[in-house]
Length: 501
Image (cartoon, rainbow, N blue to C red; front, side, top):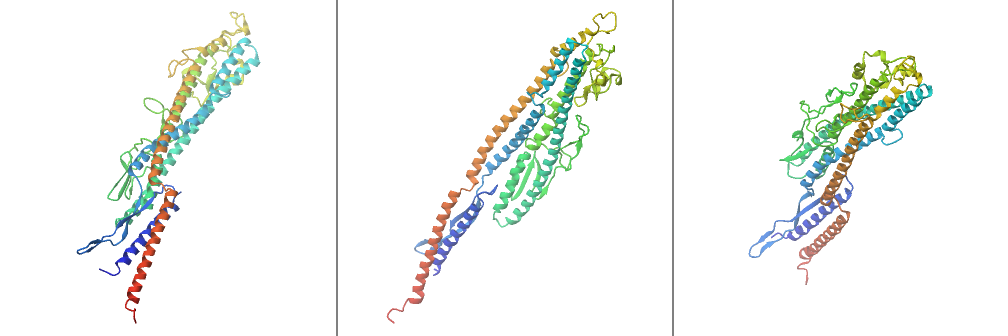
Protein backbone atom coordinates (compact mmCIF):
# COMPACT_ATOMS: atom_id res chain seq x y z
CA UNK A 1 0.00 0.00 0.00
CA UNK A 2 1.37 3.39 -0.93
CA UNK A 3 2.48 5.56 1.96
CA UNK A 4 0.95 8.53 0.22
CA UNK A 5 -2.60 7.14 0.17
CA UNK A 6 -3.80 9.28 3.06
CA UNK A 7 -2.38 12.44 1.50
CA UNK A 8 -3.96 11.67 -1.88
CA UNK A 9 -7.31 11.05 -0.17
CA UNK A 10 -7.17 14.39 1.63
CA UNK A 11 -6.09 16.20 -1.54
CA UNK A 12 -9.03 14.69 -3.48
CA UNK A 13 -11.40 16.12 -0.87
CA UNK A 14 -9.67 19.48 -1.11
CA UNK A 15 -9.98 19.61 -4.90
CA UNK A 16 -13.59 18.37 -4.85
CA UNK A 17 -14.58 21.09 -2.39
CA UNK A 18 -12.69 23.64 -4.45
CA UNK A 19 -14.56 22.69 -7.68
CA UNK A 20 -17.87 22.73 -5.86
CA UNK A 21 -17.05 26.21 -4.55
CA UNK A 22 -16.18 27.34 -8.10
CA UNK A 23 -19.52 25.97 -9.35
CA UNK A 24 -21.37 27.74 -6.54
CA UNK A 25 -19.52 30.94 -7.40
CA UNK A 26 -20.57 30.56 -11.06
CA UNK A 27 -24.22 30.11 -10.02
CA UNK A 28 -24.17 33.20 -7.81
CA UNK A 29 -22.51 35.26 -10.56
CA UNK A 30 -25.26 34.28 -13.02
CA UNK A 31 -28.21 34.51 -10.66
CA UNK A 32 -29.65 37.35 -12.78
CA UNK A 33 -28.51 36.08 -16.18
CA UNK A 34 -31.48 35.49 -18.51
CA UNK A 35 -31.84 31.85 -19.51
CA UNK A 36 -29.15 30.59 -17.10
CA UNK A 37 -29.63 27.12 -15.63
CA UNK A 38 -28.27 26.26 -12.21
CA UNK A 39 -25.24 23.97 -12.27
CA UNK A 40 -24.16 21.33 -9.80
CA UNK A 41 -20.87 19.55 -9.28
CA UNK A 42 -21.67 15.83 -9.18
CA UNK A 43 -19.40 14.13 -6.61
CA UNK A 44 -18.70 10.41 -6.24
CA UNK A 45 -16.44 8.27 -4.04
CA UNK A 46 -13.25 7.23 -5.82
CA UNK A 47 -12.55 3.59 -6.52
CA UNK A 48 -11.50 1.93 -3.23
CA UNK A 49 -8.26 0.05 -2.59
CA UNK A 50 -8.56 -3.67 -1.80
CA UNK A 51 -6.68 -4.81 1.28
CA UNK A 52 -6.32 -8.61 1.40
CA UNK A 53 -7.90 -10.05 4.48
CA UNK A 54 -9.21 -6.64 5.53
CA UNK A 55 -11.56 -5.26 2.85
CA UNK A 56 -11.94 -2.06 0.91
CA UNK A 57 -10.14 1.09 1.95
CA UNK A 58 -11.57 4.35 0.64
CA UNK A 59 -9.35 6.49 -1.54
CA UNK A 60 -11.24 9.79 -1.43
CA UNK A 61 -13.64 11.49 -3.82
CA UNK A 62 -13.81 12.92 -7.30
CA UNK A 63 -16.00 15.31 -9.35
CA UNK A 64 -17.36 13.33 -12.28
CA UNK A 65 -19.58 15.96 -13.93
CA UNK A 66 -20.70 19.59 -13.80
CA UNK A 67 -24.41 18.99 -14.31
CA UNK A 68 -26.83 21.48 -15.84
CA UNK A 69 -30.13 21.34 -13.91
CA UNK A 70 -32.80 21.41 -16.61
CA UNK A 71 -36.12 19.63 -17.21
CA UNK A 72 -36.75 18.87 -20.90
CA UNK A 73 -40.49 18.36 -20.33
CA UNK A 74 -40.84 21.84 -18.81
CA UNK A 75 -38.96 23.24 -21.80
CA UNK A 76 -41.35 21.44 -24.13
CA UNK A 77 -44.35 22.91 -22.30
CA UNK A 78 -42.78 26.37 -22.31
CA UNK A 79 -42.13 26.35 -26.04
CA UNK A 80 -45.55 24.98 -26.98
CA UNK A 81 -47.48 27.45 -24.79
CA UNK A 82 -45.24 30.42 -25.53
CA UNK A 83 -46.32 30.43 -29.18
CA UNK A 84 -49.97 30.77 -28.12
CA UNK A 85 -49.06 33.60 -25.76
CA UNK A 86 -47.23 35.43 -28.55
CA UNK A 87 -50.18 34.99 -30.90
CA UNK A 88 -52.81 36.34 -28.51
CA UNK A 89 -50.66 39.19 -27.27
CA UNK A 90 -50.29 40.48 -30.83
CA UNK A 91 -54.00 40.03 -31.53
CA UNK A 92 -55.00 41.77 -28.33
CA UNK A 93 -52.68 44.73 -28.96
CA UNK A 94 -53.79 45.09 -32.59
CA UNK A 95 -57.48 44.94 -31.68
CA UNK A 96 -56.80 47.77 -29.23
CA UNK A 97 -55.48 49.76 -32.21
CA UNK A 98 -58.62 48.94 -34.22
CA UNK A 99 -60.73 50.00 -31.23
CA UNK A 100 -58.93 53.35 -31.21
CA UNK A 101 -59.54 53.73 -34.96
CA UNK A 102 -63.31 53.23 -34.60
CA UNK A 103 -63.34 55.25 -31.37
CA UNK A 104 -66.76 53.99 -30.26
CA UNK A 105 -68.55 55.37 -28.36
CA UNK A 106 -67.42 59.01 -28.45
CA UNK A 107 -68.31 62.43 -29.83
CA UNK A 108 -66.27 61.63 -32.93
CA UNK A 109 -67.60 58.10 -33.44
CA UNK A 110 -69.03 56.63 -36.61
CA UNK A 111 -72.58 56.53 -35.27
CA UNK A 112 -72.31 60.13 -34.08
CA UNK A 113 -71.48 61.34 -37.61
CA UNK A 114 -74.34 59.28 -39.04
CA UNK A 115 -76.82 60.67 -36.50
CA UNK A 116 -75.74 64.23 -37.20
CA UNK A 117 -76.17 63.69 -40.95
CA UNK A 118 -79.75 62.42 -40.61
CA UNK A 119 -80.51 65.13 -38.06
CA UNK A 120 -79.40 67.74 -40.59
CA UNK A 121 -81.89 66.25 -43.09
CA UNK A 122 -84.63 66.60 -40.46
CA UNK A 123 -83.65 70.22 -39.99
CA UNK A 124 -83.79 70.74 -43.76
CA UNK A 125 -87.27 69.22 -43.92
CA UNK A 126 -88.59 72.05 -41.71
CA UNK A 127 -87.57 74.65 -44.32
CA UNK A 128 -86.29 73.19 -47.63
CA UNK A 129 -85.60 76.65 -49.04
CA UNK A 130 -83.22 77.67 -46.24
CA UNK A 131 -79.63 77.98 -47.44
CA UNK A 132 -78.46 77.68 -43.85
CA UNK A 133 -80.19 74.30 -43.56
CA UNK A 134 -78.81 73.19 -46.93
CA UNK A 135 -75.30 74.22 -45.88
CA UNK A 136 -75.75 72.17 -42.69
CA UNK A 137 -76.70 69.07 -44.74
CA UNK A 138 -73.69 69.60 -46.99
CA UNK A 139 -71.39 70.05 -43.99
CA UNK A 140 -72.64 66.93 -42.20
CA UNK A 141 -72.50 64.84 -45.37
CA UNK A 142 -68.89 65.90 -45.92
CA UNK A 143 -68.09 65.12 -42.27
CA UNK A 144 -69.65 61.63 -42.59
CA UNK A 145 -67.81 60.77 -45.81
CA UNK A 146 -64.52 62.19 -44.52
CA UNK A 147 -64.85 60.05 -41.41
CA UNK A 148 -65.43 56.99 -43.57
CA UNK A 149 -62.39 57.89 -45.71
CA UNK A 150 -60.15 58.49 -42.69
CA UNK A 151 -61.29 55.37 -40.85
CA UNK A 152 -60.62 53.03 -43.74
CA UNK A 153 -57.31 54.75 -44.54
CA UNK A 154 -56.23 54.18 -40.94
CA UNK A 155 -57.13 50.52 -41.39
CA UNK A 156 -55.04 50.45 -44.58
CA UNK A 157 -52.14 51.96 -42.60
CA UNK A 158 -52.58 49.35 -39.88
CA UNK A 159 -52.56 46.59 -42.49
CA UNK A 160 -49.36 48.07 -43.91
CA UNK A 161 -47.80 48.03 -40.43
CA UNK A 162 -48.84 44.40 -39.98
CA UNK A 163 -47.32 43.57 -43.37
CA UNK A 164 -44.05 45.20 -42.30
CA UNK A 165 -44.30 43.22 -39.05
CA UNK A 166 -44.47 39.98 -41.08
CA UNK A 167 -41.29 40.95 -42.89
CA UNK A 168 -39.56 41.82 -39.62
CA UNK A 169 -40.56 38.55 -37.94
CA UNK A 170 -39.30 36.52 -40.91
CA UNK A 171 -35.93 38.22 -40.56
CA UNK A 172 -35.88 37.49 -36.82
CA UNK A 173 -36.66 33.81 -37.43
CA UNK A 174 -33.82 33.52 -39.94
CA UNK A 175 -31.37 35.40 -37.69
CA UNK A 176 -32.20 33.19 -34.69
CA UNK A 177 -31.86 30.09 -36.88
CA UNK A 178 -28.36 31.19 -37.86
CA UNK A 179 -27.37 31.71 -34.22
CA UNK A 180 -28.74 28.30 -33.23
CA UNK A 181 -26.83 26.71 -36.09
CA UNK A 182 -23.54 28.28 -34.91
CA UNK A 183 -24.15 27.15 -31.33
CA UNK A 184 -24.98 23.63 -32.55
CA UNK A 185 -21.59 23.47 -34.24
CA UNK A 186 -19.72 24.77 -31.16
CA UNK A 187 -21.57 22.51 -28.73
CA UNK A 188 -21.09 19.41 -30.88
CA UNK A 189 -17.34 20.00 -31.16
CA UNK A 190 -16.93 20.67 -27.43
CA UNK A 191 -18.96 17.65 -26.36
CA UNK A 192 -17.20 15.05 -28.48
CA UNK A 193 -15.31 13.86 -25.38
CA UNK A 194 -18.56 13.38 -23.44
CA UNK A 195 -18.56 16.60 -21.43
CA UNK A 196 -21.47 19.07 -21.51
CA UNK A 197 -21.17 22.65 -22.75
CA UNK A 198 -23.67 23.86 -20.19
CA UNK A 199 -23.45 27.62 -20.73
CA UNK A 200 -23.64 27.27 -24.52
CA UNK A 201 -26.68 25.01 -24.13
CA UNK A 202 -28.32 27.73 -22.03
CA UNK A 203 -27.69 30.28 -24.78
CA UNK A 204 -29.23 27.94 -27.34
CA UNK A 205 -32.29 27.24 -25.17
CA UNK A 206 -32.78 30.99 -24.67
CA UNK A 207 -32.79 31.47 -28.45
CA UNK A 208 -35.41 28.74 -28.78
CA UNK A 209 -37.44 30.53 -26.08
CA UNK A 210 -37.44 33.68 -28.20
CA UNK A 211 -38.14 31.75 -31.40
CA UNK A 212 -41.08 29.90 -29.82
CA UNK A 213 -42.91 33.19 -29.28
CA UNK A 214 -42.65 34.04 -32.97
CA UNK A 215 -43.53 30.64 -34.46
CA UNK A 216 -44.62 27.21 -33.25
CA UNK A 217 -41.47 25.10 -32.86
CA UNK A 218 -40.65 21.47 -32.20
CA UNK A 219 -37.23 20.56 -30.77
CA UNK A 220 -35.40 17.24 -30.75
CA UNK A 221 -31.85 16.04 -30.12
CA UNK A 222 -30.37 12.76 -31.28
CA UNK A 223 -26.73 11.73 -30.80
CA UNK A 224 -25.80 15.31 -29.97
CA UNK A 225 -27.42 16.67 -33.15
CA UNK A 226 -29.99 19.36 -32.41
CA UNK A 227 -33.05 19.95 -34.61
CA UNK A 228 -35.59 22.80 -34.54
CA UNK A 229 -38.67 22.42 -36.75
CA UNK A 230 -41.70 24.49 -37.75
CA UNK A 231 -44.73 22.46 -38.76
CA UNK A 232 -42.65 19.32 -39.28
CA UNK A 233 -40.06 20.97 -41.56
CA UNK A 234 -36.58 21.57 -40.13
CA UNK A 235 -35.62 25.20 -39.72
CA UNK A 236 -32.29 24.11 -38.20
CA UNK A 237 -31.04 20.54 -38.59
CA UNK A 238 -27.75 20.41 -36.67
CA UNK A 239 -25.53 22.66 -38.86
CA UNK A 240 -27.96 22.98 -41.78
CA UNK A 241 -30.57 25.74 -42.15
CA UNK A 242 -33.76 25.91 -44.23
CA UNK A 243 -34.57 29.59 -44.17
CA UNK A 244 -37.87 31.33 -44.81
CA UNK A 245 -37.60 33.45 -47.96
CA UNK A 246 -36.36 36.95 -47.24
CA UNK A 247 -37.27 39.25 -48.82
CA UNK A 248 -40.24 36.93 -49.32
CA UNK A 249 -42.39 36.69 -52.45
CA UNK A 250 -45.40 39.00 -52.59
CA UNK A 251 -49.02 38.68 -53.61
CA UNK A 252 -51.63 41.22 -54.66
CA UNK A 253 -53.63 43.02 -51.96
CA UNK A 254 -57.19 43.22 -53.26
CA UNK A 255 -58.13 45.80 -50.62
CA UNK A 256 -55.14 48.05 -51.20
CA UNK A 257 -53.48 47.38 -54.59
CA UNK A 258 -50.72 49.88 -53.79
CA UNK A 259 -49.46 47.60 -50.99
CA UNK A 260 -48.07 44.14 -51.80
CA UNK A 261 -48.46 41.45 -49.15
CA UNK A 262 -45.54 39.30 -48.00
CA UNK A 263 -46.06 35.54 -48.11
CA UNK A 264 -44.42 33.18 -45.62
CA UNK A 265 -42.70 30.42 -47.61
CA UNK A 266 -39.68 28.19 -47.28
CA UNK A 267 -36.90 28.63 -49.77
CA UNK A 268 -38.32 25.59 -51.56
CA UNK A 269 -41.56 27.51 -52.17
CA UNK A 270 -43.61 25.46 -49.71
CA UNK A 271 -45.89 27.38 -47.37
CA UNK A 272 -44.76 27.48 -43.74
CA UNK A 273 -47.32 25.66 -41.58
CA UNK A 274 -47.95 28.09 -38.74
CA UNK A 275 -50.05 26.91 -35.79
CA UNK A 276 -49.28 29.74 -33.38
CA UNK A 277 -46.91 32.55 -32.54
CA UNK A 278 -46.60 36.24 -33.34
CA UNK A 279 -46.09 35.59 -37.05
CA UNK A 280 -49.37 33.68 -37.34
CA UNK A 281 -51.18 36.48 -35.48
CA UNK A 282 -49.78 39.07 -37.87
CA UNK A 283 -50.94 37.03 -40.88
CA UNK A 284 -54.41 36.47 -39.38
CA UNK A 285 -54.82 40.16 -38.66
CA UNK A 286 -53.37 41.28 -41.99
CA UNK A 287 -55.28 38.83 -44.22
CA UNK A 288 -58.34 37.66 -42.26
CA UNK A 289 -61.61 38.41 -44.05
CA UNK A 290 -63.72 36.56 -41.50
CA UNK A 291 -65.32 34.13 -43.95
CA UNK A 292 -65.60 30.46 -43.04
CA UNK A 293 -63.10 29.70 -40.31
CA UNK A 294 -60.79 32.55 -41.26
CA UNK A 295 -59.96 35.05 -38.55
CA UNK A 296 -61.66 38.47 -38.61
CA UNK A 297 -58.67 40.72 -39.26
CA UNK A 298 -58.24 44.18 -40.76
CA UNK A 299 -59.65 43.15 -44.19
CA UNK A 300 -62.91 42.12 -42.48
CA UNK A 301 -63.44 45.64 -41.17
CA UNK A 302 -62.34 47.22 -44.46
CA UNK A 303 -64.86 45.04 -46.27
CA UNK A 304 -67.64 46.05 -43.86
CA UNK A 305 -66.87 49.75 -44.36
CA UNK A 306 -66.84 49.28 -48.15
CA UNK A 307 -70.24 47.59 -47.93
CA UNK A 308 -71.55 50.44 -45.81
CA UNK A 309 -70.28 53.05 -48.28
CA UNK A 310 -71.74 51.20 -51.27
CA UNK A 311 -75.16 50.71 -49.66
CA UNK A 312 -75.22 54.28 -48.37
CA UNK A 313 -74.53 55.55 -51.88
CA UNK A 314 -77.02 53.13 -53.47
CA UNK A 315 -80.00 53.73 -51.17
CA UNK A 316 -79.52 57.47 -50.67
CA UNK A 317 -78.88 58.10 -54.36
CA UNK A 318 -81.93 56.10 -55.43
CA UNK A 319 -84.18 58.38 -53.39
CA UNK A 320 -82.23 61.61 -53.91
CA UNK A 321 -82.06 61.26 -57.69
CA UNK A 322 -85.86 61.04 -57.85
CA UNK A 323 -86.22 64.42 -56.11
CA UNK A 324 -85.84 67.99 -57.25
CA UNK A 325 -83.49 70.74 -56.15
CA UNK A 326 -84.06 74.45 -55.77
CA UNK A 327 -82.55 74.95 -59.22
CA UNK A 328 -85.27 72.77 -60.80
CA UNK A 329 -82.91 69.85 -61.46
CA UNK A 330 -83.48 66.17 -60.85
CA UNK A 331 -81.47 62.97 -61.21
CA UNK A 332 -78.63 64.30 -59.03
CA UNK A 333 -76.62 61.85 -56.92
CA UNK A 334 -76.07 62.74 -53.28
CA UNK A 335 -72.87 60.65 -52.94
CA UNK A 336 -70.25 59.83 -55.57
CA UNK A 337 -66.64 58.64 -55.65
CA UNK A 338 -63.85 61.20 -55.36
CA UNK A 339 -66.35 64.08 -55.42
CA UNK A 340 -67.28 63.47 -59.05
CA UNK A 341 -70.39 64.99 -60.57
CA UNK A 342 -73.49 63.02 -61.52
CA UNK A 343 -72.74 63.61 -65.20
CA UNK A 344 -69.52 61.62 -64.83
CA UNK A 345 -71.57 58.42 -64.60
CA UNK A 346 -73.92 56.80 -67.09
CA UNK A 347 -76.05 55.30 -64.33
CA UNK A 348 -76.05 54.33 -60.65
CA UNK A 349 -74.58 50.87 -61.27
CA UNK A 350 -71.45 52.42 -62.77
CA UNK A 351 -71.06 54.53 -59.61
CA UNK A 352 -71.55 51.53 -57.32
CA UNK A 353 -68.84 49.59 -59.17
CA UNK A 354 -66.40 52.38 -58.33
CA UNK A 355 -67.38 53.53 -54.87
CA UNK A 356 -65.55 52.38 -51.74
CA UNK A 357 -65.17 53.62 -48.18
CA UNK A 358 -61.85 55.24 -49.13
CA UNK A 359 -63.33 57.35 -51.95
CA UNK A 360 -66.99 58.01 -51.07
CA UNK A 361 -67.70 61.73 -51.11
CA UNK A 362 -70.46 64.27 -51.37
CA UNK A 363 -71.17 64.71 -55.08
CA UNK A 364 -69.38 67.51 -56.89
CA UNK A 365 -72.74 68.96 -57.93
CA UNK A 366 -73.82 69.65 -54.35
CA UNK A 367 -70.32 70.67 -53.26
CA UNK A 368 -70.39 73.47 -55.81
CA UNK A 369 -74.05 74.42 -55.30
CA UNK A 370 -76.34 73.37 -52.45
CA UNK A 371 -79.36 74.07 -54.69
CA UNK A 372 -78.80 70.54 -56.06
CA UNK A 373 -79.93 69.04 -52.75
CA UNK A 374 -83.22 67.41 -53.75
CA UNK A 375 -85.60 68.04 -50.87
CA UNK A 376 -88.70 68.33 -53.05
CA UNK A 377 -90.65 65.50 -54.65
CA UNK A 378 -91.50 67.61 -57.74
CA UNK A 379 -90.29 70.50 -59.83
CA UNK A 380 -90.90 73.55 -57.63
CA UNK A 381 -91.78 75.60 -60.68
CA UNK A 382 -94.33 73.12 -62.01
CA UNK A 383 -98.04 73.83 -61.80
CA UNK A 384 -98.51 70.41 -60.22
CA UNK A 385 -96.43 71.56 -57.24
CA UNK A 386 -98.43 74.35 -55.62
CA UNK A 387 -96.29 74.24 -52.44
CA UNK A 388 -93.24 75.28 -54.44
CA UNK A 389 -90.09 75.54 -52.35
CA UNK A 390 -91.96 74.33 -49.27
CA UNK A 391 -92.22 70.79 -50.65
CA UNK A 392 -90.15 68.54 -48.36
CA UNK A 393 -91.44 65.11 -49.38
CA UNK A 394 -88.16 63.87 -50.82
CA UNK A 395 -86.26 65.01 -47.74
CA UNK A 396 -88.72 63.05 -45.62
CA UNK A 397 -88.12 59.95 -47.77
CA UNK A 398 -84.38 60.35 -47.21
CA UNK A 399 -84.98 60.59 -43.46
CA UNK A 400 -87.15 57.45 -43.51
CA UNK A 401 -84.17 55.47 -44.80
CA UNK A 402 -82.68 55.82 -41.33
CA UNK A 403 -85.23 53.30 -40.01
CA UNK A 404 -85.47 51.19 -43.17
CA UNK A 405 -85.05 47.54 -42.11
CA UNK A 406 -84.16 46.66 -45.69
CA UNK A 407 -81.47 49.33 -46.09
CA UNK A 408 -78.81 46.62 -45.91
CA UNK A 409 -80.66 43.85 -47.74
CA UNK A 410 -77.88 41.97 -49.53
CA UNK A 411 -75.09 42.16 -46.95
CA UNK A 412 -74.17 40.42 -43.72
CA UNK A 413 -75.23 41.91 -41.34
CA UNK A 414 -78.56 43.33 -42.52
CA UNK A 415 -81.07 45.92 -41.25
CA UNK A 416 -80.92 49.68 -40.78
CA UNK A 417 -77.69 51.71 -41.05
CA UNK A 418 -77.54 51.80 -37.26
CA UNK A 419 -78.11 48.02 -37.09
CA UNK A 420 -75.26 47.47 -39.53
CA UNK A 421 -72.81 49.57 -37.54
CA UNK A 422 -73.87 47.97 -34.25
CA UNK A 423 -73.32 44.51 -35.74
CA UNK A 424 -69.81 45.42 -36.93
CA UNK A 425 -68.99 46.88 -33.53
CA UNK A 426 -70.39 43.74 -31.89
CA UNK A 427 -68.08 41.60 -34.03
CA UNK A 428 -65.19 43.70 -32.88
CA UNK A 429 -66.27 43.57 -29.23
CA UNK A 430 -66.51 39.76 -29.32
CA UNK A 431 -63.09 39.42 -30.98
CA UNK A 432 -61.50 41.88 -28.57
CA UNK A 433 -63.00 40.19 -25.51
CA UNK A 434 -61.92 36.76 -26.78
CA UNK A 435 -58.37 37.99 -27.41
CA UNK A 436 -58.18 39.51 -23.92
CA UNK A 437 -59.39 36.31 -22.29
CA UNK A 438 -57.07 34.10 -24.31
CA UNK A 439 -54.10 36.35 -23.56
CA UNK A 440 -54.93 36.34 -19.83
CA UNK A 441 -55.32 32.55 -19.84
CA UNK A 442 -52.04 32.01 -21.69
CA UNK A 443 -50.30 34.49 -19.43
CA UNK A 444 -51.46 32.51 -16.38
CA UNK A 445 -50.35 29.23 -17.97
CA UNK A 446 -46.94 30.68 -18.83
CA UNK A 447 -46.54 32.13 -15.34
CA UNK A 448 -47.08 28.64 -13.91
CA UNK A 449 -44.59 27.08 -16.34
CA UNK A 450 -42.02 29.80 -15.61
CA UNK A 451 -42.45 29.20 -11.88
CA UNK A 452 -41.84 25.48 -12.36
CA UNK A 453 -38.82 26.14 -14.55
CA UNK A 454 -37.44 28.65 -12.04
CA UNK A 455 -37.92 26.23 -9.14
CA UNK A 456 -36.07 23.57 -11.11
CA UNK A 457 -33.35 25.51 -12.92
CA UNK A 458 -33.26 28.91 -11.24
CA UNK A 459 -30.56 30.06 -8.87
CA UNK A 460 -31.56 30.57 -5.23
CA UNK A 461 -29.11 32.92 -3.53
CA UNK A 462 -30.03 31.52 -0.12
CA UNK A 463 -29.37 27.97 -1.26
CA UNK A 464 -26.08 28.90 -2.92
CA UNK A 465 -24.92 30.76 0.21
CA UNK A 466 -25.71 27.65 2.25
CA UNK A 467 -23.74 25.52 -0.23
CA UNK A 468 -20.86 27.98 -0.09
CA UNK A 469 -20.60 27.61 3.69
CA UNK A 470 -20.86 23.83 3.42
CA UNK A 471 -18.14 23.53 0.77
CA UNK A 472 -15.96 26.06 2.60
CA UNK A 473 -16.08 23.94 5.76
CA UNK A 474 -15.38 20.84 3.71
CA UNK A 475 -12.42 22.57 2.08
CA UNK A 476 -11.05 23.69 5.46
CA UNK A 477 -11.48 20.20 6.87
CA UNK A 478 -9.61 18.67 3.93
CA UNK A 479 -6.85 21.26 4.35
CA UNK A 480 -6.64 20.42 8.05
CA UNK A 481 -6.38 16.74 7.18
CA UNK A 482 -3.47 17.49 4.84
CA UNK A 483 -1.77 19.45 7.65
CA UNK A 484 -2.29 16.52 10.02
CA UNK A 485 -0.89 13.99 7.56
CA UNK A 486 2.02 16.33 6.90
CA UNK A 487 2.80 16.34 10.62
CA UNK A 488 2.62 12.51 10.68
CA UNK A 489 5.08 12.32 7.79
CA UNK A 490 7.30 14.88 9.51
CA UNK A 491 7.54 12.67 12.59
CA UNK A 492 7.79 9.45 10.59
CA UNK A 493 10.48 10.65 8.20
CA UNK A 494 12.51 13.19 10.11
CA UNK A 495 12.10 12.34 13.78
CA UNK A 496 11.60 8.59 14.02
CA UNK A 497 14.72 6.95 15.56
CA UNK A 498 16.15 10.16 17.03
CA UNK A 499 15.02 9.30 20.58
CA UNK A 500 18.02 8.43 22.81
CA UNK A 501 20.70 9.84 20.52
